[in-house]
Amino acid sequence: MQTLQTTSLRVVDNKLWILDQQALPQQKNWLHADSVEALVGHIHALRVRGAPLIGLSASLLLALLGERGLSRKELTHALETLRAARPTAVNLMNNLDRMKEALAQENVAAALEAEAVRLVQEDRELCDRIARAGSQLVKPGSRLLTHCNTGGLATAGVGTALGVIAQAFDEGKVANVWVDETRPLLQGGRLTAWELGELGIPYQLITDSMAASLMAQGLVDAIWVGADRIAANGDVANKIGTYSLAVLAKFHHIPFYVAAPQTTLDPDCPNGAAIPIEQRAPAEVTGVAGSFGAVQWAPENARVYNPAFDVTPAALISGWVLDSGVVTPDDVANGRFKK
Image (tube, rainbow, N blue to C red; front, side, top):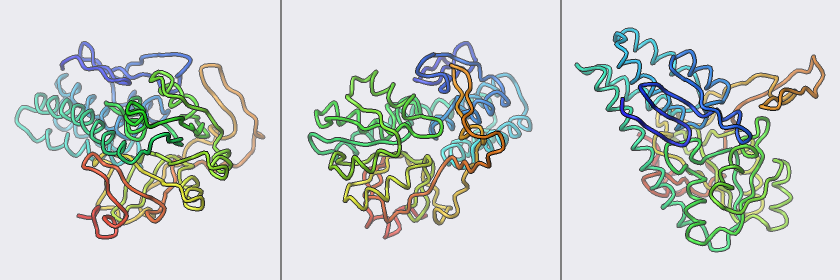
């Protein structure tokens, strides 16, 4: 396969490498992801994360496995194993559906490579379209709030919600970005803060529980988040803590926008209640681990509830910004996301 580079993925000498997002920002470690078992492990540990990036990493690995001469049966098994790695993020399913079509072609290896490279390029282009469409909704002097990480670390391009923010900043419309730390794994504090710093965009890091106070003081002009799945009725699954921001935004009359690619839409999913929500390890809540080591602050026998995502009802969303343009609540009410 040709050499390929994004912020978080590399294909060099027919090997897949991933940037360890658990080690950022203190360390920039590139790790091998040359087997299905390795990549699934990276996905589960969130060393690879972000709905678009997960789908792209799985697609690239399948293409590399095809070049190594695996049979159709072996490649199909690998595909289905990767499909089960992250049940909430529908981008993974959509990308693998396209790779499955490539598996049916006569020259399997060439078809898999072409489709995987095409998916990466499409992601770069759709990120640019999302950024341009979303920036039109940002008013001059805006103080924006975002949750989790939706930039180049999570995509092949400039990102989704963070791509919108970067585009609007380049147009001189962003005064400050409030960055939720995003508990329990701090993707905002570790990753979004790092990306904004690299881009030269002014930001302030806050704990998740500070957002309400900022809104009450009139210090937030709009909220921008990404999505892991958008149901046919417009409900959105995203990183845990997104729903509470939407409720607060509604109360304080603040626009709440979702930026995501078309591959995040799931017209077969009727509503948010039908979206599977991944439950993660208790250790993520009872303490913290990172490049610095591990610390536990909760009692050893503490019972833990740790969903990775929550669902924001469509009624709380001001607009969905896709690579096809801005979708309004009226559009969704008229069945825009349905087949």
